[in-house]
Image (tube, rainbow, N blue to C red; front, side):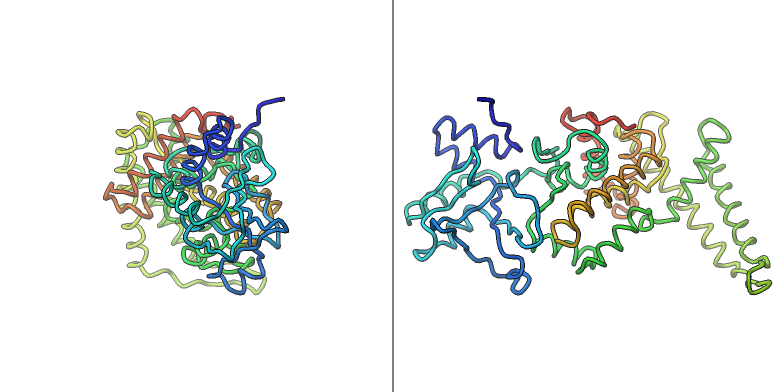
Length: 401
Protein backbone atom coordinates (compact mmCIF):
# COMPACT_ATOMS: atom_id res chain seq x y z
CA UNK A 1 0.00 0.00 0.00
CA UNK A 2 1.27 3.47 -0.85
CA UNK A 3 2.52 5.65 1.95
CA UNK A 4 -0.13 8.13 3.05
CA UNK A 5 0.62 11.76 2.18
CA UNK A 6 -0.07 13.91 5.21
CA UNK A 7 -1.74 17.23 4.40
CA UNK A 8 0.76 19.18 6.49
CA UNK A 9 3.62 18.93 8.93
CA UNK A 10 1.08 18.65 11.76
CA UNK A 11 -0.48 15.44 10.51
CA UNK A 12 2.90 14.09 9.35
CA UNK A 13 4.14 14.22 12.93
CA UNK A 14 0.97 12.57 14.26
CA UNK A 15 1.20 9.87 11.58
CA UNK A 16 4.81 9.07 12.37
CA UNK A 17 4.15 8.80 16.09
CA UNK A 18 1.11 6.57 15.54
CA UNK A 19 2.99 4.34 13.08
CA UNK A 20 5.72 3.82 15.70
CA UNK A 21 3.16 3.16 18.40
CA UNK A 22 4.63 6.06 20.37
CA UNK A 23 1.52 7.50 21.97
CA UNK A 24 3.51 9.81 24.19
CA UNK A 25 4.94 11.50 21.08
CA UNK A 26 1.46 11.52 19.53
CA UNK A 27 0.11 13.39 22.55
CA UNK A 28 3.07 15.78 22.47
CA UNK A 29 2.28 16.58 18.83
CA UNK A 30 -1.41 16.93 19.63
CA UNK A 31 -0.64 19.37 22.44
CA UNK A 32 1.22 21.57 19.94
CA UNK A 33 -1.59 21.40 17.40
CA UNK A 34 -4.66 23.60 17.11
CA UNK A 35 -7.84 21.53 17.45
CA UNK A 36 -10.97 22.61 15.62
CA UNK A 37 -14.36 21.80 17.12
CA UNK A 38 -17.35 21.58 14.72
CA UNK A 39 -20.43 23.59 15.68
CA UNK A 40 -23.80 24.32 14.08
CA UNK A 41 -23.47 27.73 12.49
CA UNK A 42 -26.95 28.82 13.56
CA UNK A 43 -26.05 28.12 17.19
CA UNK A 44 -22.81 30.12 17.07
CA UNK A 45 -24.48 33.00 15.23
CA UNK A 46 -27.06 33.15 18.03
CA UNK A 47 -24.48 32.84 20.83
CA UNK A 48 -20.89 33.37 19.61
CA UNK A 49 -19.37 32.93 23.06
CA UNK A 50 -20.77 29.40 23.61
CA UNK A 51 -18.96 26.29 22.40
CA UNK A 52 -21.01 23.15 22.93
CA UNK A 53 -20.13 19.49 22.67
CA UNK A 54 -22.19 17.58 20.10
CA UNK A 55 -21.24 13.90 20.40
CA UNK A 56 -22.13 11.29 17.77
CA UNK A 57 -24.21 8.17 18.33
CA UNK A 58 -21.17 6.38 19.76
CA UNK A 59 -20.74 9.14 22.37
CA UNK A 60 -17.53 10.48 20.86
CA UNK A 61 -16.68 14.10 20.13
CA UNK A 62 -14.84 14.80 16.87
CA UNK A 63 -12.08 17.39 16.51
CA UNK A 64 -9.75 18.10 13.60
CA UNK A 65 -6.23 19.36 13.20
CA UNK A 66 -5.69 22.26 10.82
CA UNK A 67 -4.68 20.18 7.81
CA UNK A 68 -7.60 17.76 8.20
CA UNK A 69 -10.45 20.25 8.32
CA UNK A 70 -13.37 19.47 5.98
CA UNK A 71 -14.20 21.95 3.23
CA UNK A 72 -16.26 24.88 4.55
CA UNK A 73 -20.02 24.63 4.13
CA UNK A 74 -22.90 26.93 4.96
CA UNK A 75 -24.15 25.05 8.02
CA UNK A 76 -21.14 23.86 10.06
CA UNK A 77 -18.38 26.09 11.42
CA UNK A 78 -15.29 25.34 13.47
CA UNK A 79 -13.90 26.86 16.64
CA UNK A 80 -10.17 26.71 17.35
CA UNK A 81 -9.20 25.33 20.77
CA UNK A 82 -6.21 23.73 22.50
CA UNK A 83 -5.83 20.33 24.11
CA UNK A 84 -5.67 22.12 27.46
CA UNK A 85 -9.01 23.80 26.76
CA UNK A 86 -10.64 20.42 26.23
CA UNK A 87 -9.02 19.03 29.37
CA UNK A 88 -10.34 21.92 31.45
CA UNK A 89 -13.80 22.00 29.82
CA UNK A 90 -14.53 18.26 30.15
CA UNK A 91 -16.59 16.79 32.97
CA UNK A 92 -18.26 13.47 33.73
CA UNK A 93 -21.36 14.31 31.68
CA UNK A 94 -19.35 14.80 28.50
CA UNK A 95 -18.58 12.20 25.78
CA UNK A 96 -16.55 9.13 26.66
CA UNK A 97 -14.01 9.71 23.87
CA UNK A 98 -12.36 12.57 22.01
CA UNK A 99 -12.05 11.51 18.36
CA UNK A 100 -9.06 13.19 16.69
CA UNK A 101 -9.31 13.32 12.89
CA UNK A 102 -11.81 10.43 12.76
CA UNK A 103 -11.77 8.29 9.64
CA UNK A 104 -8.19 9.19 8.69
CA UNK A 105 -4.85 7.39 9.04
CA UNK A 106 -4.01 9.70 11.96
CA UNK A 107 -7.23 9.13 13.87
CA UNK A 108 -7.12 8.47 17.59
CA UNK A 109 -9.91 7.89 20.07
CA UNK A 110 -8.83 9.25 23.43
CA UNK A 111 -10.54 8.19 26.62
CA UNK A 112 -11.61 10.99 28.92
CA UNK A 113 -11.24 9.81 32.50
CA UNK A 114 -9.91 12.28 35.09
CA UNK A 115 -6.50 10.61 34.78
CA UNK A 116 -6.59 11.06 31.00
CA UNK A 117 -7.47 14.74 31.34
CA UNK A 118 -4.57 15.20 33.73
CA UNK A 119 -2.23 13.65 31.14
CA UNK A 120 -3.57 16.02 28.49
CA UNK A 121 -2.70 18.95 30.74
CA UNK A 122 0.77 17.54 31.38
CA UNK A 123 1.46 17.27 27.66
CA UNK A 124 0.17 20.80 27.17
CA UNK A 125 2.41 22.11 29.96
CA UNK A 126 5.42 20.42 28.34
CA UNK A 127 4.70 21.81 24.85
CA UNK A 128 7.15 24.44 23.64
CA UNK A 129 4.79 25.93 21.05
CA UNK A 130 1.22 25.91 19.80
CA UNK A 131 0.05 26.09 16.22
CA UNK A 132 2.04 26.85 13.10
CA UNK A 133 5.07 29.03 13.72
CA UNK A 134 4.74 32.59 12.36
CA UNK A 135 7.48 33.67 9.99
CA UNK A 136 7.86 30.32 8.22
CA UNK A 137 6.46 28.93 4.97
CA UNK A 138 3.64 26.46 5.65
CA UNK A 139 1.76 24.61 2.93
CA UNK A 140 -0.93 22.01 2.44
CA UNK A 141 0.58 19.10 0.51
CA UNK A 142 -2.88 17.72 -0.18
CA UNK A 143 -6.04 19.79 -0.22
CA UNK A 144 -4.39 22.96 -1.58
CA UNK A 145 -2.95 23.80 -5.02
CA UNK A 146 0.83 23.95 -5.30
CA UNK A 147 1.08 24.91 -8.99
CA UNK A 148 -1.02 26.67 -11.61
CA UNK A 149 -3.01 29.91 -11.77
CA UNK A 150 -4.93 29.40 -8.52
CA UNK A 151 -1.72 28.63 -6.66
CA UNK A 152 -0.15 31.79 -8.14
CA UNK A 153 -3.07 33.88 -6.90
CA UNK A 154 -2.82 32.31 -3.46
CA UNK A 155 0.93 32.95 -3.41
CA UNK A 156 0.24 36.65 -3.97
CA UNK A 157 -1.12 36.56 -0.41
CA UNK A 158 1.91 34.69 0.97
CA UNK A 159 3.31 37.69 2.85
CA UNK A 160 0.33 37.62 5.19
CA UNK A 161 0.23 33.83 5.35
CA UNK A 162 3.88 33.67 6.41
CA UNK A 163 3.67 36.49 8.95
CA UNK A 164 0.45 35.03 10.45
CA UNK A 165 1.62 31.41 10.54
CA UNK A 166 -0.90 29.95 8.07
CA UNK A 167 -0.92 27.68 5.02
CA UNK A 168 -0.15 29.89 2.03
CA UNK A 169 -2.19 27.68 -0.34
CA UNK A 170 -5.36 27.09 1.69
CA UNK A 171 -8.33 28.06 -0.47
CA UNK A 172 -10.95 26.09 1.51
CA UNK A 173 -9.99 28.30 4.41
CA UNK A 174 -10.98 28.15 8.07
CA UNK A 175 -8.21 30.34 9.45
CA UNK A 176 -8.31 30.66 13.22
CA UNK A 177 -11.89 29.51 13.44
CA UNK A 178 -15.24 31.07 12.61
CA UNK A 179 -15.62 33.47 15.53
CA UNK A 180 -12.01 34.65 15.50
CA UNK A 181 -12.08 35.27 11.74
CA UNK A 182 -15.30 37.27 12.06
CA UNK A 183 -13.74 39.28 14.86
CA UNK A 184 -10.67 39.93 12.69
CA UNK A 185 -12.76 41.42 9.89
CA UNK A 186 -14.94 43.37 12.30
CA UNK A 187 -12.10 45.01 14.22
CA UNK A 188 -9.55 45.47 11.41
CA UNK A 189 -11.82 46.22 8.45
CA UNK A 190 -15.22 47.12 9.95
CA UNK A 191 -16.76 44.24 7.98
CA UNK A 192 -19.72 42.44 9.52
CA UNK A 193 -21.65 41.07 6.55
CA UNK A 194 -21.22 39.60 3.08
CA UNK A 195 -21.88 42.90 1.30
CA UNK A 196 -19.20 44.69 3.32
CA UNK A 197 -16.71 41.90 2.64
CA UNK A 198 -17.39 41.92 -1.09
CA UNK A 199 -17.08 45.72 -1.31
CA UNK A 200 -13.68 45.76 0.42
CA UNK A 201 -12.48 42.80 -1.65
CA UNK A 202 -13.36 44.57 -4.90
CA UNK A 203 -11.60 47.75 -3.79
CA UNK A 204 -8.47 45.71 -3.08
CA UNK A 205 -8.64 43.94 -6.43
CA UNK A 206 -8.90 47.36 -8.08
CA UNK A 207 -5.99 48.69 -5.98
CA UNK A 208 -8.23 51.41 -4.56
CA UNK A 209 -7.20 51.14 -0.90
CA UNK A 210 -3.45 51.61 -1.20
CA UNK A 211 -2.57 55.32 -1.28
CA UNK A 212 -3.00 56.83 -4.77
CA UNK A 213 -0.36 59.43 -3.85
CA UNK A 214 2.26 56.70 -3.36
CA UNK A 215 1.33 55.14 -6.68
CA UNK A 216 1.38 58.53 -8.43
CA UNK A 217 4.93 59.19 -7.27
CA UNK A 218 6.13 55.77 -8.40
CA UNK A 219 4.31 56.08 -11.72
CA UNK A 220 6.14 59.34 -12.46
CA UNK A 221 9.44 57.56 -11.94
CA UNK A 222 8.37 54.58 -14.06
CA UNK A 223 7.64 56.95 -16.96
CA UNK A 224 10.98 58.71 -16.51
CA UNK A 225 12.85 55.41 -16.35
CA UNK A 226 11.11 54.27 -19.52
CA UNK A 227 11.88 57.53 -21.32
CA UNK A 228 15.53 57.72 -20.32
CA UNK A 229 16.31 53.98 -20.00
CA UNK A 230 18.43 54.40 -16.91
CA UNK A 231 18.53 55.47 -13.27
CA UNK A 232 16.34 58.44 -12.37
CA UNK A 233 17.95 61.23 -10.36
CA UNK A 234 15.92 62.09 -7.26
CA UNK A 235 15.71 65.81 -8.04
CA UNK A 236 14.68 65.06 -11.61
CA UNK A 237 11.97 62.79 -10.20
CA UNK A 238 10.77 65.50 -7.80
CA UNK A 239 10.74 68.09 -10.54
CA UNK A 240 8.75 65.86 -12.90
CA UNK A 241 6.21 65.12 -10.17
CA UNK A 242 5.84 68.83 -9.45
CA UNK A 243 5.33 69.64 -13.14
CA UNK A 244 2.69 66.91 -13.39
CA UNK A 245 0.79 68.16 -10.33
CA UNK A 246 0.83 71.77 -11.55
CA UNK A 247 -0.37 70.71 -14.97
CA UNK A 248 -3.19 68.65 -13.43
CA UNK A 249 -4.28 71.65 -11.36
CA UNK A 250 -4.30 73.87 -14.47
CA UNK A 251 -6.29 71.34 -16.51
CA UNK A 252 -8.84 70.93 -13.75
CA UNK A 253 -9.54 74.68 -13.85
CA UNK A 254 -10.07 74.85 -17.62
CA UNK A 255 -13.59 75.03 -19.08
CA UNK A 256 -15.02 71.65 -20.09
CA UNK A 257 -17.74 70.73 -22.54
CA UNK A 258 -20.31 68.45 -20.92
CA UNK A 259 -23.78 67.26 -21.98
CA UNK A 260 -25.14 70.17 -19.94
CA UNK A 261 -23.00 72.72 -21.72
CA UNK A 262 -19.72 74.41 -20.88
CA UNK A 263 -18.66 73.90 -17.27
CA UNK A 264 -16.18 76.29 -15.68
CA UNK A 265 -14.40 74.96 -12.60
CA UNK A 266 -12.96 77.16 -9.90
CA UNK A 267 -9.14 77.08 -9.78
CA UNK A 268 -7.78 75.19 -6.81
CA UNK A 269 -6.34 77.44 -4.09
CA UNK A 270 -2.64 78.00 -4.66
CA UNK A 271 -1.85 77.00 -1.08
CA UNK A 272 -3.57 73.66 -1.61
CA UNK A 273 -1.57 72.92 -4.75
CA UNK A 274 1.70 73.98 -3.11
CA UNK A 275 0.92 71.81 -0.10
CA UNK A 276 0.28 68.82 -2.35
CA UNK A 277 3.57 69.39 -4.17
CA UNK A 278 5.49 69.68 -0.91
CA UNK A 279 3.90 66.46 0.34
CA UNK A 280 4.88 64.53 -2.79
CA UNK A 281 8.43 65.88 -2.62
CA UNK A 282 8.67 64.63 0.98
CA UNK A 283 7.19 61.27 -0.05
CA UNK A 284 9.82 60.84 -2.77
CA UNK A 285 12.46 61.40 -0.12
CA UNK A 286 10.88 58.72 2.10
CA UNK A 287 10.68 56.24 -0.76
CA UNK A 288 14.30 56.93 -1.67
CA UNK A 289 15.47 56.32 1.89
CA UNK A 290 13.49 53.09 2.17
CA UNK A 291 14.94 51.86 -1.11
CA UNK A 292 18.45 52.64 0.08
CA UNK A 293 17.80 50.52 3.17
CA UNK A 294 16.13 47.82 1.05
CA UNK A 295 19.26 47.56 -1.09
CA UNK A 296 21.52 47.43 1.95
CA UNK A 297 19.43 44.65 3.52
CA UNK A 298 18.95 42.56 0.39
CA UNK A 299 15.32 43.39 -0.20
CA UNK A 300 16.30 45.08 -3.48
CA UNK A 301 19.27 44.31 -5.71
CA UNK A 302 21.99 46.88 -6.25
CA UNK A 303 20.48 49.67 -8.32
CA UNK A 304 16.98 48.24 -7.85
CA UNK A 305 13.87 50.30 -7.20
CA UNK A 306 10.19 49.67 -6.52
CA UNK A 307 7.86 49.81 -9.53
CA UNK A 308 4.49 49.95 -7.77
CA UNK A 309 2.80 49.58 -4.39
CA UNK A 310 -0.41 48.11 -5.83
CA UNK A 311 0.86 44.68 -4.79
CA UNK A 312 -0.10 45.47 -1.20
CA UNK A 313 -3.75 45.56 -2.22
CA UNK A 314 -3.48 42.48 -4.43
CA UNK A 315 -1.78 40.53 -1.63
CA UNK A 316 -4.42 41.58 0.86
CA UNK A 317 -7.16 40.76 -1.65
CA UNK A 318 -5.83 37.21 -1.95
CA UNK A 319 -6.11 36.84 1.82
CA UNK A 320 -9.39 38.77 2.09
CA UNK A 321 -10.96 36.31 -0.33
CA UNK A 322 -10.08 33.48 2.05
CA UNK A 323 -11.08 35.38 5.17
CA UNK A 324 -14.53 35.75 3.63
CA UNK A 325 -14.77 31.96 3.25
CA UNK A 326 -13.87 31.44 6.92
CA UNK A 327 -16.57 33.94 7.91
CA UNK A 328 -19.09 32.38 5.48
CA UNK A 329 -19.44 35.73 3.71
CA UNK A 330 -18.44 34.03 0.47
CA UNK A 331 -17.99 30.54 -0.94
CA UNK A 332 -14.83 28.74 -1.97
CA UNK A 333 -15.86 29.42 -5.57
CA UNK A 334 -16.12 33.16 -4.82
CA UNK A 335 -12.67 33.05 -3.28
CA UNK A 336 -11.19 31.21 -6.25
CA UNK A 337 -12.44 33.83 -8.68
CA UNK A 338 -10.99 36.62 -6.53
CA UNK A 339 -7.67 34.82 -6.05
CA UNK A 340 -7.31 34.25 -9.78
CA UNK A 341 -7.95 37.93 -10.40
CA UNK A 342 -5.43 38.97 -7.73
CA UNK A 343 -2.85 36.81 -9.49
CA UNK A 344 -3.61 38.40 -12.86
CA UNK A 345 -3.48 41.92 -11.44
CA UNK A 346 -0.11 41.31 -9.82
CA UNK A 347 1.20 39.78 -13.03
CA UNK A 348 0.29 42.96 -14.89
CA UNK A 349 1.95 45.28 -12.37
CA UNK A 350 5.28 43.50 -11.76
CA UNK A 351 7.85 41.47 -13.64
CA UNK A 352 8.90 38.97 -10.94
CA UNK A 353 8.05 37.66 -7.50
CA UNK A 354 10.94 39.69 -6.08
CA UNK A 355 9.56 42.92 -7.59
CA UNK A 356 6.09 42.14 -6.29
CA UNK A 357 7.43 41.39 -2.82
CA UNK A 358 9.45 44.63 -2.70
CA UNK A 359 6.36 46.64 -3.69
CA UNK A 360 4.31 44.93 -1.02
CA UNK A 361 6.99 45.59 1.60
CA UNK A 362 7.36 49.27 0.66
CA UNK A 363 3.63 49.93 0.97
CA UNK A 364 3.51 48.23 4.33
CA UNK A 365 6.46 50.28 5.57
CA UNK A 366 5.05 53.57 4.24
CA UNK A 367 1.78 52.85 6.04
CA UNK A 368 3.05 51.49 9.35
CA UNK A 369 6.75 52.12 9.89
CA UNK A 370 7.11 55.93 9.63
CA UNK A 371 10.85 55.55 8.87
CA UNK A 372 11.53 54.11 12.29
CA UNK A 373 12.96 50.95 10.72
CA UNK A 374 11.45 49.14 13.69
CA UNK A 375 9.30 46.03 14.04
CA UNK A 376 7.15 46.75 10.98
CA UNK A 377 10.23 47.13 8.82
CA UNK A 378 12.00 44.14 10.34
CA UNK A 379 8.98 41.85 9.88
CA UNK A 380 8.52 42.96 6.26
CA UNK A 381 12.19 42.32 5.56
CA UNK A 382 12.15 38.93 7.27
CA UNK A 383 9.07 37.79 5.35
CA UNK A 384 10.54 38.95 2.04
CA UNK A 385 13.81 37.12 2.68
CA UNK A 386 11.95 33.96 3.72
CA UNK A 387 9.78 33.99 0.61
CA UNK A 388 12.68 34.66 -1.74
CA UNK A 389 15.13 32.13 -0.24
CA UNK A 390 13.21 29.25 1.40
CA UNK A 391 13.23 26.26 -1.00
CA UNK A 392 9.61 25.54 0.03
CA UNK A 393 8.45 29.05 -0.90
CA UNK A 394 5.88 29.41 -3.68
CA UNK A 395 7.97 32.32 -4.98
CA UNK A 396 10.68 29.79 -5.90
CA UNK A 397 8.35 27.06 -7.15
CA UNK A 398 5.70 28.89 -9.19
CA UNK A 399 6.89 30.65 -12.37
CA UNK A 400 5.98 34.34 -12.39
CA UNK A 401 4.57 34.01 -15.91
